[in-house]
Length: 353
Image (tube, rainbow, N blue to C red; front, side):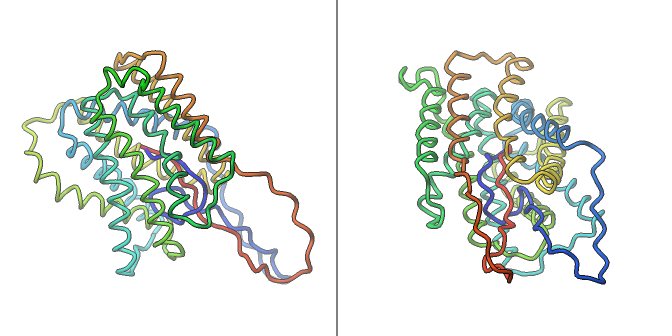
């Protein structure tokens, strides 16, 4: 569940690059066949992705009622990996061959999967799923703040800086800062915010180390989830004991969390970015906390004070401002010839749980 950000980094475990426009076919050549249109309209898939990621926080909450947090994370990664491995086998995707790529994927798996998933699971032991979903929406704010320091080419505009300020004002509203954070579980909330910070840190790392990797996004994503599963397979026995029973509802929640929220959601995201581009696809971020809040209140009976939904709206407004871009003026015509600056084919950083 990370938070989306701007379309810049070539990274696994997120959206694939939008298709790069190709030049017209030369005379006498046969044009490539058009890609087959998906059976479901993109709007339906967009709504499905929003629901899947929005309900992920509820599924984490239910899963932790029967299993330790590390077990929930291991189960979701195992189920999600199974879905992506099956997709890779159907499409005959090849795994990366470079040892350097596998090394960077190992770090990416920790920052983008193993660590944030575990932190959200531990956080929801003590905080409502609604608050976890809202904390997840702060990822674009963290990403904006970090990009100023870590990415020298990504200079913020006044509007984006204003969005950063508005967003963190919303965070303080959600947390009830004027009340001295009264009644708030600070460790649990801190872990949820730290989990949301992991995503932009991971994206910056991936942008610096895996840009230009020749393997497909699906192959990189599947490989990354495999590595994250192995990491949890090592860690989980060290901090937990084998479960004495397998309660039905928590078990189904963990399986759904992995197969849908970590497996199918990536495939839906992959297709959306291919079809409608990262700018439209990343709008899913703004529906996740709304759905997470509605699910927590309606199905888990979680209570809301006025500052939680109001602060969430302020957070989303700030996040939207941090992702805004100035309108581009029409470029002047130039003489025919090769373009010295090839189009950016980097994927969008979409938020997900």
